[in-house]
Length: 311
Image (tube, rainbow, N blue to C red; front, side):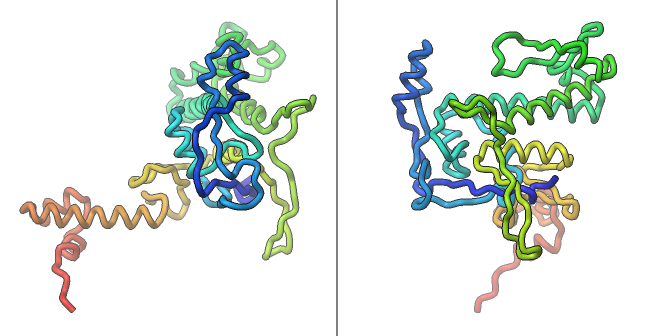
């Protein structure tokens, strides 16, 4: 399954969002014994709005590596606000308070770190990282409890479940734990409903090449992120960080030497390198030294330093 099998229309408020007190959330926090410090919601015109002051984009085609950027997001009000202003709120059908954002990020961090431990183990077979999530004690298999489970640090698998794995194997149980996390976040338990509902639906979508095509429609940004993550893991996609803006991008098999997320960053890097070459030349650096510092060639540097002809 590829990202092209999915479609989403995530709204983002053009006029931005703001942190403001939500008194229902505040009262709920206080009732539970909290201070109400997290009684904040991200409020913008896009919430509950069908049309008007917002733009709509599809992260499956326009932001394929957004799941990796979300993994690096700091759980601060400023960082979350900046993320929402650029990519939208986690769920477009309701308000989301600060606790909800941080809970989603904690879940994400757990799954992302587990995946990184799995990849590290596949490369080196060193067990230090993966042992933080999976361990054997004699014939008993334990999984690390996720952060939203407050009962214990380790979950003991029933003997019948542990028997499916070879004794002492760490990779398969860790992969199974990751799959269970993906499954957990593909459904949502709505208030008043006894059965969890899928976070995506199958629909028929127009397709110029074939008249129509089946698409899996994903309504909310947080669900998009989990699906992007799962598809990347399943297809063993490779990602790098842009050398200019730091955003993640997917490596294309035909462009393994790619260093920038888009043409805008590529051109900015070009202009910055040219500007630096001119500055170094003004400070008396030789062309050879400039080539070495910028990892470039003589012809390119001479072209940058050549005076512009007056028209």
